[in-house]
Image (tube, rainbow, N blue to C red; front, top):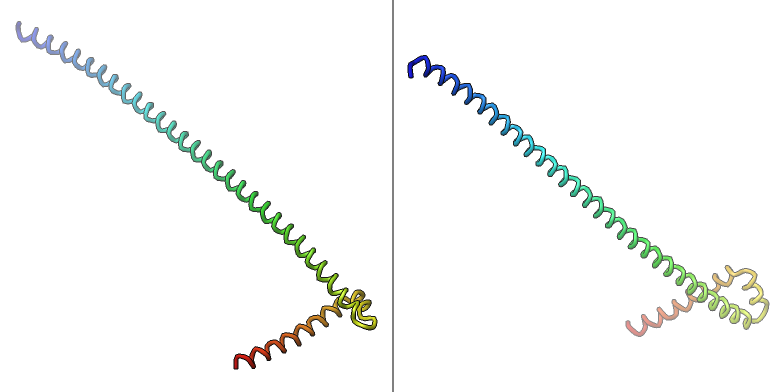
Length: 144
């Protein structure tokens, strides 16, 4: 082989090597691109999964909180209703007893007490104050 033939052969081999390297670079670029797309798709799927999980969890917590709140509202309403009934019943009993006591007092005191209930309350407070003072005085004598 002479120098001229060797140069042609080297030129062809260099051209073929350049072509093969170009093909190889194109293949690598395509694979990197596919890998990038796969990573991007995986990232998007992960983002969607995490977002869905977060929304579902938030919704679930919200529903549970709403149930607890509703249960608490019902319990408070039931307790308030029971207290209202009990207080109403107790006040009716107190009013009945107070009216019976007022009816036993001579004069028109019973009629006045039913006509002017605030008078009865004032008189009861006065008696309570006097009774408390007597008890307090007795307690001071026994402890002092």
